[in-house]
Length: 477
Image (cartoon, rainbow, N blue to C red):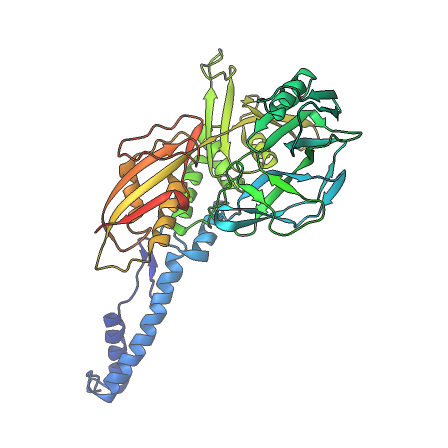
């Protein structure tokens, strides 16, 4: 019996070999004079049978290749990666924590209520119902609705009463109230549209409310975008309530959301499988923990682990024999659980964020890590089209740049403009010819980028974040 899978791989028959084999077998049966020329009826039949059998051989080749992660695609690649316990990352939706406010004494905002990021009209849904009570809540937001001179206003806060006497023209009443709250033991921050008040654990206001001021009570709620994909929600962007909900008067997010992600591409999965397979062979090392954080925790977009193996505190404040995991994305609980399961035994975790988790014995374990800080990357591309390939359009070009950046920019990775050219050509996209790339990095999305072609250093606790809105495309004339 012939053997077609050998020590060197699969030995596939060509169409010519198949036809020659069929002709030889037919002549063995019907005699050497059996006509098989291509113009004869028998020859045409042999050709049709040869083509059908060639398709079967192609199928056998595809099945054989599907076992190789370097060649498999789609679900076959999923199966190959699963052998290493690596699974394709599904698309995720942007998630953000925001404060829901009411002017009522109390209100319950039901799960599923919607807020909107005005930029792009992106809708978010409330994950769980939120109950707000003016007497004890997370935040108070005070708006001056027309206070008058020579008028006394009394605020009955839970941390103490505050009396505001409006006797100084030219000074904002909210500025004066801000100073009085701090003097009374509370905490407050002046904002463009009002005065934000909070307490150590909670804050509240009781009794008769002062006239001429609107006082909103607020509580935090978790929102998730209604669509998946690489969307962001920066500080203050979730500020619109598109559909009236009883008792819900205002929404604000004071922290940036966790960006959403696209489903992992074949190219990304191949690279991650290879990296993880190498790193996870060892345990308790920095690369292994980084791999587990990126591969095992849903929503993690960047992770870096830095150890202090000395017996003294290092220059960044890490204690002796400790490690710091810098992570972007993922919930606090999931990140902490992953660190606990994969950290080296007896080594202290360190960071500016601490979460208590329960181990397999039911005991509490305090896990510390740090949230990596996003630096906002801008990419400007002046490009020519390549006439010999089909260009799918600028949206696809933006998507290819974002896909490449999500793979490239882990924590602490510098922005090197020349590397970005990889995202302009296959396997990411077709149809782009010559191009010129310049880049900029800003501390917020509202800053004006200053594009250049120099390398931009990224700090050890930072990572470069790129979204489609910060890709500027300029077709060359």
